[in-house]
Image (cartoon, rainbow, N blue to C red; front, side):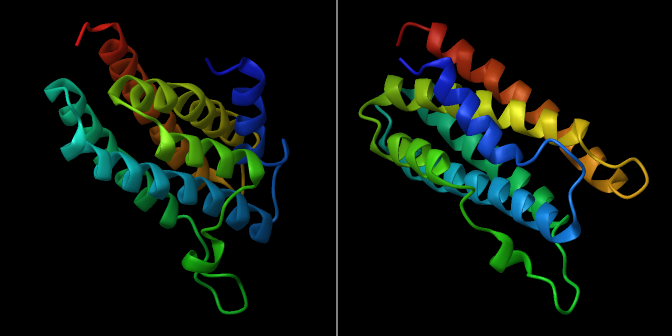
Length: 171
């Protein structure tokens, strides 16, 4: 079972500092979130055809596509100006907690472990990170970021509910 400390550490690492960010800092934080979403996309997409349960196969494929959509939304916020890191340069791991959580997801054995690890710590931490990042935006400068993060909070919340429902199902 994942502890709340692991989830909180992961969420804090993904969210970055609890203040308005410079453009370069924002690119690093949003790029780190994009990195996590792209990793979810890859792992869940790879595991969908290998699932032993049809419910998990459908869930995994759907969750993979949702992660790809969230990654695209984040990419739209990354800078493209000369002299600033671009989308690919900004898309890097947020740190050791992120790397460990994603490695544990990739190594999860069996359908139930995959679904459970996705729910907590990953979805739980992403939900917290998107929410706290949206709360820390600068009203004048970060309106597009706040709008996109609000959509991502809603999407991850829906994904978490669906994931928890799958975990309650006897399969």
